[in-house]
Length: 138
Image (cartoon, rainbow, N blue to C red; front, side):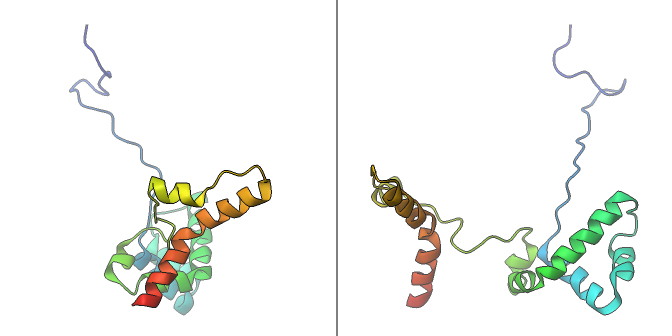
């Protein structure tokens, strides 16, 4: 008796992945926004999403409007080559991590919930404050 997943066909082989989510780069998003501003939504959808129809096309239309709304962020991300190739944008300092000792210093245990909340807010805003301090030094 064989082990593992049964083959999808008689020749063997694995089942293909059914990836459903697609991610676009900031460069592509900016190109779509520029096309929308110059030609309108219909021309943009036919130019950038020619094979899409039905509810998927409606979803893409909503995505275009969202990208237009976030044009300023997308354009600032596209100023660098790495930023243009990225697929997501997050706030500065969000990826900053603390060592265990640094987190322990920030999160002092307290019986007063208000003090605990202040310590928690200090911990969450630490990366952003750190980034601003570093930018001042440069």
